[in-house]
Length: 168
Image (cartoon, rainbow, N blue to C red; front, side):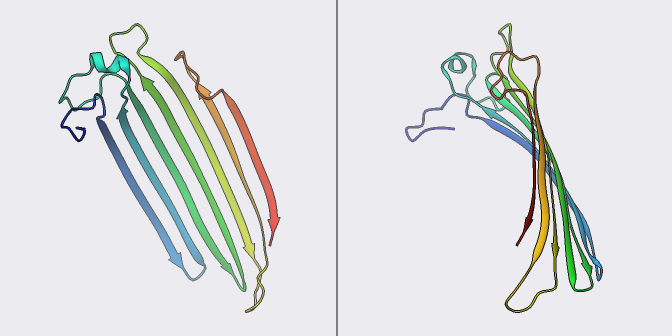
């Protein structure tokens, strides 16, 4: 982009691709929905080294940029069982994060990591009145981060599990 004085700010270009899909079914028994989202931005980075290698006016990222990809698959479901209502939701998200430096350097890919996240929750709503509502449920998450051969590991390799039961 150009600043207020008309000067180019080096390597501030970005290119992005995306896709969103969704489908569902709604019946008396309940609703069942599934979604898919994909986003792939490539975001330029301004730093001292990029100023010397980036050409003005070029639209494609070649030096010093983040190359990201995100896939998200989610499902939202609701079942009506007499006076009870059951909600079941789940999602899986896969993120790739790559930081690419100077393509003329011996090390081009500086960061290369994958983050996988699976989340889920379910809620059972009991028959309610105008003044009360009661529900029980569970929710949780499993997440793992994996670094690949790139030299920089900005987030360490890790696995996290989270689980809870609740009643309201």
